[in-house]
Image 1 (cartoon, rainbow, N blue to C red):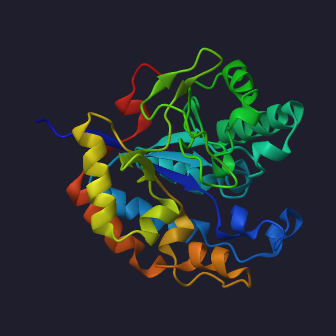
Image 2: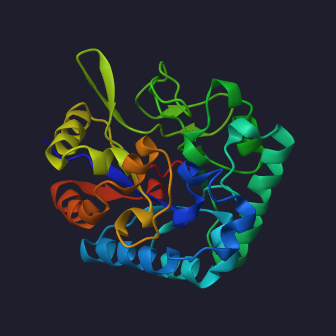
Length: 276
């Protein structure tokens, strides 16, 4: 069988932007934090260059506004630029008007530091759910061709649509949807999309789950954050469960990415889905 080509994506944000730290480091304190996003993104770019892989970078507008040359370097290296919104505010806590403004601001910022037409969006913490379904029309009206924000699971408190199809779907209300990837085992959906799942599961588990998806003809939508390759990032006091999810195995991520890029084929959304 011809190997399935998967999608490699990066949610380009700094370590203090994550939802786990929301409430611990308020947005009005971000400017005071030590930024590590340039160094960490360059580490990822070098790994992708080593394996000759093009990826899709979902860029946070707040970061792009402060580090436009970093986004230009991502583009110069041959990667696709997409948007992660501007403020990293979950759609769950936004009104439609606030989301429209946030998305518009992110697109304006990216237009200043990239020559690409931004076609893709990923919501912070995958917060396109049944409660925020209204966001799809706003994306479409803003010129977004595809979304990659829906996690087809039901166990997570912040995100998920448990009955959403596992494969790529054209949504009548909005853009093409590339849901985050899960394998089905024993009647359960198990994420194999990257992020915390990539760090917490032993690598052979991730590999087996991804191979199952590929055996069914489904490309895996994989994602990682720049801060996940940075074991030296500042440590913040937080509840034990969040601390475990955020910091565990940061020192193993790069080695696992190397193995991943050797074991599977990857490209960007624009290359895999030229219809967008």
